Length: 314
Ligand code: PIR
Ligand code: CA
Image (cartoon, rainbow, N blue to C red):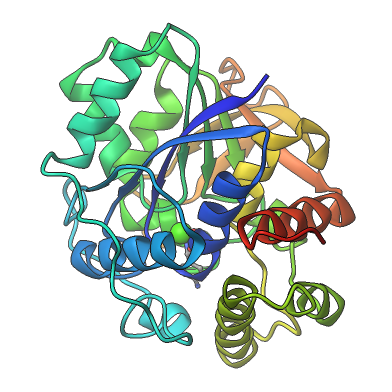
C-alpha cells in the first residue's frame, strides 16, 4: 500500500530533499506539490520547487499558495537558505509551469475528490495554506488521513529560544492546524536535529554519480555552511525530510501522544509549541509528537530514493 501525499513546502534545502524522497520512494504516491511563503517569498520558493522538479524528473502538479501569513508580517530565512531560498546549486530552468489555480484550491480539490481517509497532508513550511484550506472547505478536516508536519519543537526553538521558524512565521495558522479534528503528527526540532547529513551520508550520495546526486550534494554543502556559521552545527539537520520518511516507513521514528498548543500572546514565547505529554492542562492529547529517530533507516531510504530517481541503484 502506498501513502498518497500532498507536499506543501517552501523550498528550501531540506524541503528539496523531502520532495526527492516523496517522488523517489516506492511507498509514497506524491499527488501534488503546493508552495507557501516561508524560507523566501512565494515567487522564489515556487520557482525553486519547479527547478527541483526539473532536476529530479518529478512530474506532478505544482501550485503556488499564500504570499503572506494570516495576520502577521512576513518572515523569511535568507541567513539559512540564501537570497534565492535555495542557494548553492545552479538552478535549472523549470520544465513545467505552475498550475493556474491557487494552492489552497488544489489541496481542497484533491482531498474532496479522493476517497475519504486516503490523502495525507505534509506541510514543511508555515501552515498558512493548510489553515486557509480548512476555513474555506471545513469538510477536508474529516477527509484527510493525517497531517504530518515539520514544525515546532517539544524543546527549544530555532528562530527564537522558544519558537521554531515554520510555526512562528504564522502562529495563527499553526494553532488552527493543531486544534483541527484530524490526526496530526508534529515532526519538531527535538526530532529533526537528530537528522543530520554527516560526511558518510554525503559520500554515499556523491557515489551515486548522477546529475541529481550532484545537485543534492551541492544543496547539502550550502546548508552545512549556513548551519555551521549561524547555528553552530557540525552537520546540517535535514528537518523536512523526516516528515515524508515517516509516511514511507513508520519505524523511522517513534512518537508520544501529547497536547500541543501554539502560544499566540507571549511576550517572548510567541510561536512556541507548548507540548504537554502529561495532563497539566487537562486537555485531550491532540498530537503524535516525534521523539526518537532511527537515523540509518532515514538515510538508507533517502539514498535509495536519490538512486531510483537517478535511474540507477545504490
Ligand atoms: C530551517 C528553516 C528555517 C529557518 C532555519 N533557521 C532553519 C526551515 C526549514 O525548511 C524547515 O522546514 C524549518 N524551516 C525548520 O525550522
Ligand atoms: Ca521548509
